[in-house]
Amino acid sequence: MDPGLNAVLQEASALAQRAGAVLLDWLARLDRGGMRRKSSGRDLVTAADLASEECILQGLSRAFPGDGVLAEESGARGGGRRVWCVDPLDGTTNFVHRLPCFAVSLARLSDGVPDVAVVHAPLLAETFTATRGGGAFCNRARLRVSETTALGDALLATGFPYRRQFLRDNNLENFNRLFLHVRDLRRMGSAALDLAYTAAGRFDAFWELHLQPYDVAAGGLMVTEAGGVADTLVPGGDWIHGRNILAGPAPLLLPIREQLLRGRPVDYPPLTEWDAPRP
Image (tube, rainbow, N blue to C red; front, top):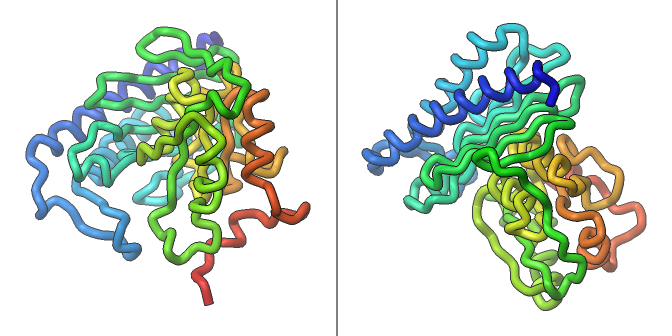
């Protein structure tokens, strides 16, 4: 591992764990007064979310004062060659309902490419990490993607957008298309953990639509460092900014993609064009 990346990873891991402690503190005293709703109606934002993000932003400002930030709640600030993608609470709905599948997700992009990643699940006591060229780990145990190649043997994971009632492609058709061809499907409610679990081989592969860079940058690096592939549904796209991702072992992605793209035109439109409400 690049010693420079290792130092950055150690700082990012400590920061994610501090933010995780903030989340657990809020979880212990969560009440209805500590939450509000975004305009979508389904997208719950808690005081914990905001407190976790503030913890992370302060830490990044101290440790990496020249780096930019793209954060879920406060948006973009700064810029330059290095930008941190910050999701202070991925799995907000799980958190509000006291389900354990929520996480803090941090990833650094250097010249647009992720090189440091942390996904910390505080209630599960698991910290997933990766550096570019240095491998992926969970609590220091090295990760490796699944060796499954047959679709019928695969356990897949996916998710659905909060504004699904307004989107032309809300992923339900894809779910239905794959459902009868796989061992089973899971919908955990946290893309960051779905990707980390894919890197660990717990899930055989993962796909989802309408995502942001802070949802996928950390977990996508973990999948690639664990021997897998992170790509878009249409091969060769920008999985960080392209708003959709397909990740897992390369041999398994072929039959999954065949089902996902079945019946679609060759010039399958970018999913970024599909975010407008129905007329």
